[in-house]
Length: 143
Image (cartoon, rainbow, N blue to C red; front, side, top):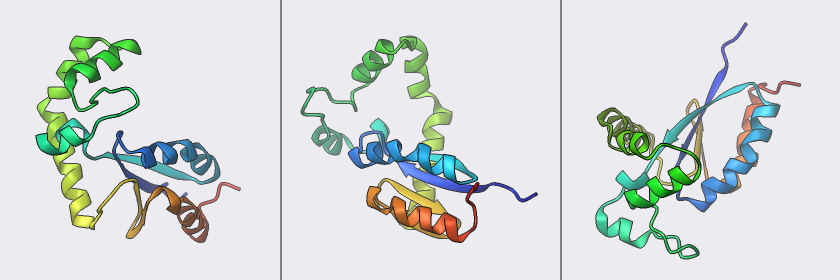
């Protein structure tokens, strides 16, 4: 029995292109015997304050880089505010994000969403078909 192949997804919750890809993921994992490995990049800690100031959602006029907004959104979906606040500041989470950034940099990843399968890199929401083709070439289809 062979081990499941990892498909790493480097993403940022703020990216509309990552949102598009998120809607395509169920089909990929229904069709192929692969393991999704999440690699979050960015987030509120991924940019300098001047860069964060530019990233606002104009439709709702809320800066999702602002911790109070994150806490409000979390509370609105039933998360405990204090627990969420502690998680946001947890040193191990911040260290893990830094490690993911270093991994992305070492692979030459310049944007999100980016998928990697072994040494192959597929950057962009419009590259999902190439990812599917590659997984077929590797004979990872469940069918």
